Image (cartoon, rainbow, N blue to C red; front, top):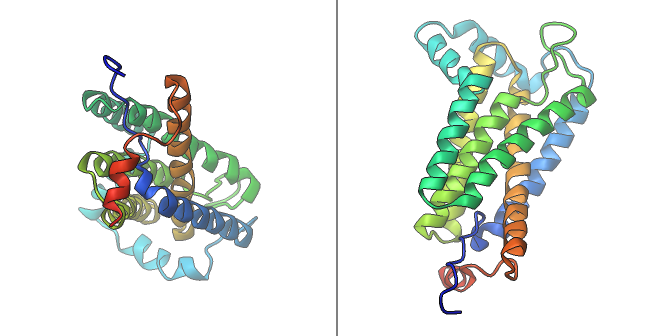
Length: 235
């Protein structure tokens, strides 16, 4: 209709929905399986021992400083700076849905780790130090996922390139924070894997929900923005 405001682009590109939905379901399954495997445990498992002893023993300056700096990004002060920067960037790019997803997607991902920890009751360094899944890893992975979704949408990437970008960003962020947590003996490697999978399970569904709510508020049929262009890119 003439004079109507331009439709806000979806934060979850339609061409990526099916693939990221499948990834989300698989990641949720991994979180559950690992949680069952390590429920009530207070020591490293077989998979953990492939990594935790050499990493914990060998990280010395300057790599320890790198681990501490990475860990700070998941602490309240560092996380707040990253979230504010990401929200500001999304608003400057006129991506209000992405700005909402930064707050909601990251918040839900971290919130899920806090809910799961007492259910699994896995500890590290004694009672009271609940470790599974890693909230730090979930936070940075979730933030990277949102940023990658924005980049994929703005670049108009097709399915293969878009999925590669999103999962690649999640892998880099999750590996960096996971390494830092293991290096500092704050988590077992499988805790980091659980945190990574938590973000992968939560963010795509949250992005879809943000789009649905935004479309309903705007009075548009959900999932229509840019669908024609996206279908062309499937070829």
